[in-house]
Length: 344
Image 1 (cartoon, rainbow, N blue to C red):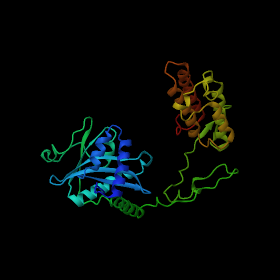
Image 2: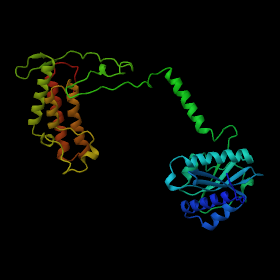
Image 3: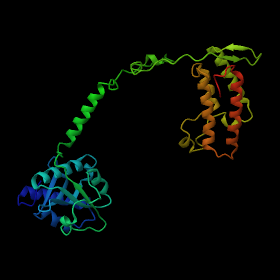
Image 4: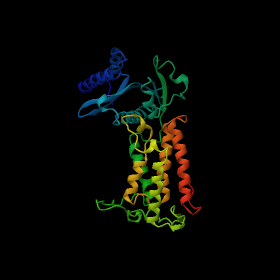
């Protein structure tokens, strides 16, 4: 922290700080900046990087009133959002409290600086007695007066270390009850792998995952002769193909046969994040292992209908087609399952 002491190096730093303030605070008259910087009642805390001034805070302490006024505060544009402002403010608070016994800081902040001062513990509510500061500090038009009460139990310069120590203590305590900090290796996939059991994922069992209970057995109704067949993977897949084919042939299915062309509807993917159409469902059916259950199959169809109603207005033909086709889909699924377990 320096002042206009007559030292050559201090004078050079103050001139550099004046140039920084003049550039970062264009609404402040340069003559006024020079007058306050060179006034020996003002002190300046500098942030130096490789010997160059990259930031600073100029303030004046009123020792009898036990408060200090921050006149200027700025960091060069190329070094902002790097923590210099916070570190500068912490050092100013520590220095002024220990050297001068300061209990409060006051400042007039413009609209662009209010957010910064709030982060540094300043408030628009002035609790310091009015008679202690009124008439001592200069009023600024368009500025917001703010106050920060200093704590004598807190080391501002050690504050980051205190936060790190508290975080480490909390993390160490959590590790006694949780294994969330353990990082497991991932699965190495190759082209021959089509499906991976969840139990093969490292760490999943340790996290408490358990295999799902087997589904309640049900039967399918064969459409050709209305006989009941077991819900084997082959029978389920045949039933899903049959449902899909009937959906494709429905007179209200024409809006859903192919994916929506983004060139014709540019904003479609801005609204619909998970598009589904009948051609996509057909390709997933062709893989043979995508739709392992009826619920997964039904979820894709319901998503398709929901997308249509989300994008289109209720009075459009597309909205009406979605409603009619959904009703047909529910009837088709319900008529093919001989169990009340599944409801669509």
